[in-house]
Length: 307
Image 1 (tube, rainbow, N blue to C red):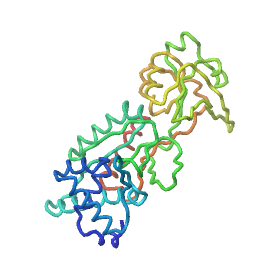
Image 2: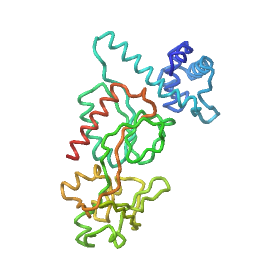
Image 3: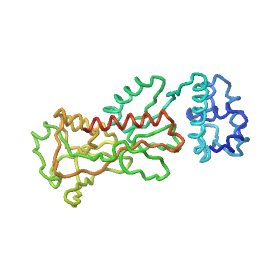
Image 4: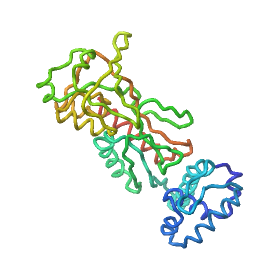
């Protein structure tokens, strides 16, 4: 949001109404949060749209969704209101405030089995930070959904996103439980995976069943199959622990299980697919002091885990 655009807004309260309406998905929900009538929230939105000369929502009798202009405004509006609140508090106390409400999207396996504990430590250090988690392996739309930052694996196809590395050298590893290996034997090379039950992961309609491996400049692609697949990485991890097959998982996800011996790494002389870990946001202006500290904390946790 530019200074010129900000000057068009005659009432900052209208900007808060816009933000809460976008996050809650309805005028009535925003009205309840603000303890005002739906008519007043509707009037505030109309006033803001008039001030900016833009339509921010597409309205119907049953739904309310952001226009492209509204999607662009939302992260800037949230940041502007938070920065104003923090600046006023810093002026009154003389101290930098590390606080705010962070909505974070995290892959299911990493979130449940690693990041939950990491966030506990972060909030112990900064108790005025509140967190709402979205645990899912689906790719969150940072422009449309009420998410401030996302933790993501792999390549990022949207070049407009701001991506900060957390663990750039992370790779996939082959692994299985001692229970499975006692029954079915251990593959000595990736080529032998065709004779094993492989636990596959699918994202939307894309099934990850062509597993790639690297050694001495050579790339080996193996088509795998099996009797189980899931759109949830944590489910694949649990199946592997229970002895149902071989998994091809992020090292960061399974490293604790490898260290306890609950899982065994297979074909260690072959490198797995790169799957770097990123902290991602839609706009550089969202890199508040709180988000910067969160990124530094998560980087340290990742390094401590893999070392």
